[in-house]
Length: 288
Image (cartoon, rainbow, N blue to C red; front, side):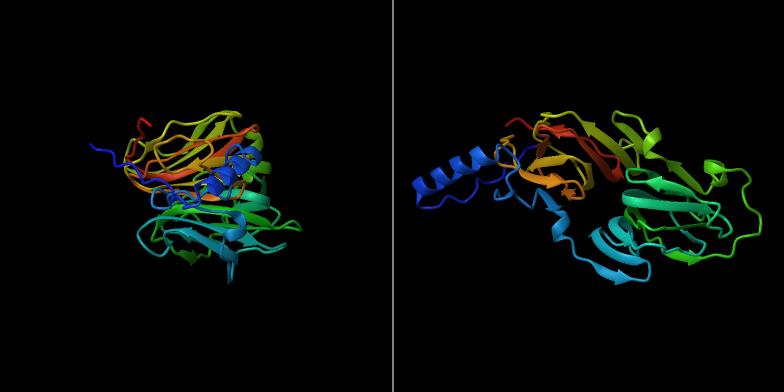
C-alpha cells in the first residue's frame, strides 16, 4: 500500500516573521501548542471548551461521534445535575459508560435508590443489552462518557418485584450491569471489552508514562479517544515532529480518521485515555 503524506503547513511570505514566531512558540510550548494547525482530515479533535451542548430530558448532552439512533459507532457526553434519577429502562444493544466527573449511582431491576452502587470518576459500567437498570446522582451530579453501537434507543421497563439480595456491589446483577470501579482497575493499560482484532465493538484503557511518544501510524477504520487524565499531544502527519502537535487535555475528544497518518505522546506528566472502535482493526507504522 502506498502512503500519501499530507502537505506541509501554509508558509507565509514573510518568512523571517514566521520563523521568529515559530521559534518563540517552540520556546513557550515545546509540544502541544494550541496555535499549531493539524490536518483535520487525518485526525479531528474537540477540546472541552469547544463542545456543543443541548438540553435533553436526561441532562445536557454533547454528541461527539455518530448517532445512537442510527447504525454504527456512537459517542457522546451526558451531564446530569444533582439528584437526578432515571426510572428502570433497557437498551437494545450493549452500552458502555465511563464516569468523567462526579459520582454515578447505578442499580439493576426494581427502582430503589437504597440498592445502588456509587461509581466515582474513572469508573466504568457495561449495560448489557435488554438488561433492566436505572441510575442517578446525588449532591455532586455526574458527567458521563457514553459509547455504543446504534441503533440503540432506551425503552422504559417495569421489572419484576424481585431484587438481587446482598449489599454493596452484590446488589448489582452482573447479567444486567458489569461494573469496574476506578479503585479496582489495573494500574497499566488493559482491555475493557471486546478484541480489536475481531469483528465488533472494542474498548481499551491506555496509560502512558511521561515523555512517551508513538511513531507515525494509521488505522484502517475510524476510532475515537477520550482523554481521562493528563494531556495528550496529537499530530496529524508522518513527521513525528513534537512541535507540530495540539495539546488535548482531560475531557478532550479525538477522532482518528480511517487511513489518516498521525502520532501522539505525553509531556512531563502521565496520560490516561480510553480508546473505542469497531474491529477488526490494526495499527500500521509509517516511516517519517
